[in-house]
Length: 109
Image (cartoon, rainbow, N blue to C red; front, side, top):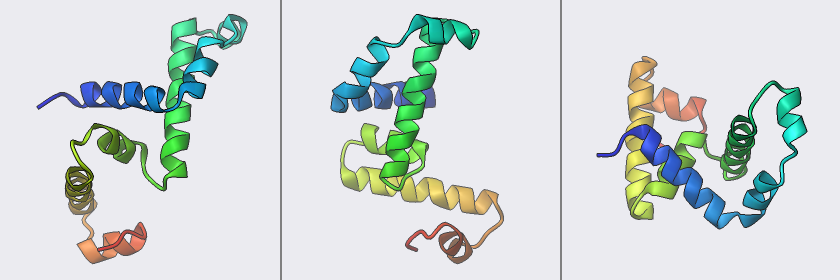
């Protein structure tokens, strides 16, 4: 299985392919804005990309890690199964019952 960073990079690549307007914005960033923040243009671009990715996840009602799963899963069924598995692991790590977790996050249980 691939490493999480590889999955996330694949998700970012797919996100950019699906949203060419974001790619255009990233390719026309002002280098002086990066310099003003004390960042290289590549660092500044990466930060803007992650912001756009997180905004898209929020727009879809997902966490960023869920959007990563969605963009890298082989099917919607695989995405839903992986998503459910991770949520159950998080609930267990938090010491919450599945019902409590679902209520807390307005997640269908």
